[in-house]
Length: 218
Image 1 (spheres, one colour):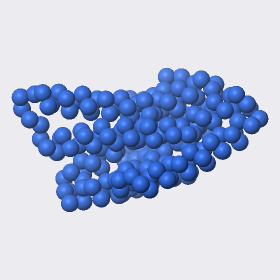
Image 2 (image 1 turned 60 degrees about the vertical axis):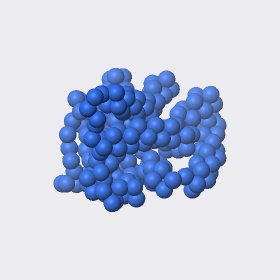
Image 3 (image 1 turned 90 degrees about the horizontal axis):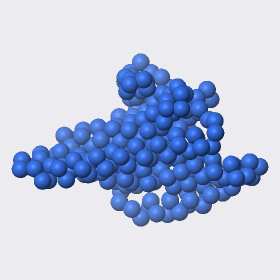
Image 4 (image 1 turned 90 degrees about the vertical axis):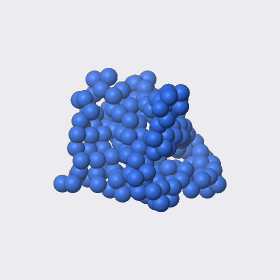
């Protein structure tokens, strides 16, 4: 989604500590679209996959929002059409970069936790339920893929914003132009790669693209 996600009376609202979270109803529809091709034959697993997508996007945005709070700025998370955003404030390059890296970092941490849980369950005497293993494997693969993809220097992904921060810091006059050029080249390469990947990952490629942070007050 290219702008702020409008509020509705059907939004799910809750808080994670001091961070308010709002989930637009369309998020659930698009999350189901992302995993439909892989799990439409198995409704219970489809539901678990949708919840795994929700958890993955939420954890990613919590990374951004938590780092924003550490720096003393207010933040909120909004999930909507194909992803979401966490509001933040823009100050120094170093702090901006920390906020941007925190999202993919949180996703990789969730992937590591999923892997550790898989290992523990595999070594336990009591075998885990197949659906649990399937969901944990889904979380592992998706969060690695999603986090790495978000670091590709394509605007408005985290990687594109990271590249822009660095290039503008190096050259305040031409940095924005150079960031747009890098983004265009990387986007072309990413599109070519995405067309040759598995259908499920192509959908995750689409879902990941709009995810970004929003400066508070804009």
